[in-house]
Length: 154
Image (cartoon, rainbow, N blue to C red):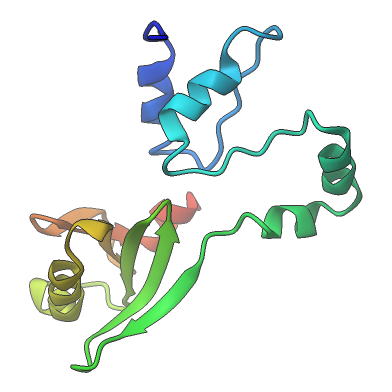
């Protein structure tokens, strides 16, 4: 059965790029869960609290409940000595981050990051530097720099 495109799809896809969580409310059986499954089943874990046992576990020990859904985090060092400070694996894709204390970030700061991203190919979805620079900007065509305060919205 082919489902009709929902009006909210574009808004949700835009919001997920900015916010770590999205809540959609509405009446029962209106397609909320189906919409999220269509949009995110390959990249995100859907957690439903409709099952009473799951709801009780979440209520009794929320930290343990949420910890079971954390993405794998890595530090990566290749045989060639190339390093990436933070690798997050979500939905089969890798997100590569270098952490720099410098306020001035240039292309020389991302040599390892760029080489490893190219070596890993299509599995890499994000390549970025988190730094003390004043602004967010593109270092290279495929590598962004983010000011750490902008990431944390401090």
